[in-house]
Figure 1: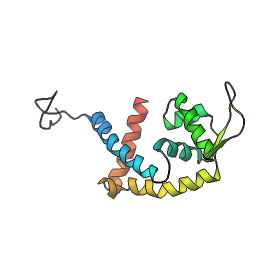
Figure 2: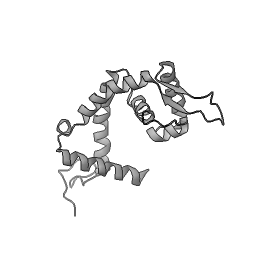
Figure 3: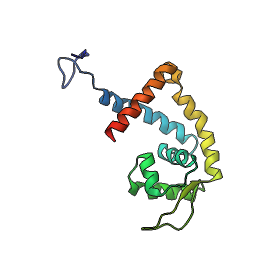
Length: 151
């Protein structure tokens, strides 16, 4: 039987280990940190995800990009238009309903991404999150496994 922590609310006998609840609580703290970090370079976390995904070099459709950054395809159009207007991404054709247009990062997008990346690395550094390098690697592997199991 798992060890229970002191109780409150729904678990008067002690809270059981609830890893996914811990994950969602932690994600709120992490999201606030990333939002502030990306705001300092003029991006949102999702915009960073789009640029980082496109920087891999593959031209992707909006639907493929939405899947890659885990947003609804309907949300991707507004997001893409904002990046397009800022000259951070471009498309290889007119696109439109039923027509695939490849999306790619521009040189300006790469430059902005390069400004953000060192800050992302610092924010993720094991010592910044209270873990050893080995623990941080294991946490990354475990989180990927959970995401893949639930996706």
